[in-house]
Length: 236
Image: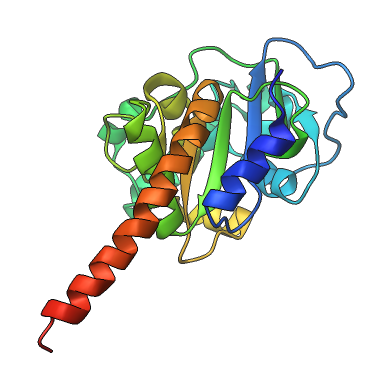
């Protein structure tokens, strides 16, 4: 059984994180012993913020209805009385030039609608996570990405953009991905201007954590090497 607390500690020792990594688990039934979310949030990614702050809970599809785009990436159909909100949201995004209609079919989606989604900080994960979200600065994202590449778990796809939540199904389908985020996510989660996301499939996390030991050590040695060459060879 994986010690999630120790795993979060190990990764945090190697990678300077802006906030605690978030474990997200997509389930086909409600989990035992986990509190159901009570209240409302404007988006699915708002739950990331709550989890990073130390809350552990699960949501059901209706908790995601306030975000038509997030519901789309999570393969959640809005209720009949709210079904038009998806078209309205997309129409607004088309109108302001945020996204083009031909881009929508290319947005990754979960293959199956989850019956429940568990959110927690990684150390507090009550079930094995489907994906783990790291909010971090580019230098930390570099280390995570290099570790994923080292063990052959990095996605062969470019850095993702809007919508941020598509990084979850993309990671599940293709491997570790980086995302620059989107404006909605940055507002809802408080992600800093100097931060981005790395999303890792839960099944790959332990292997990537092991690779981080090598990558962090190698980068420390290469830092000294590069600093020496800069001092020796830079003329200005």
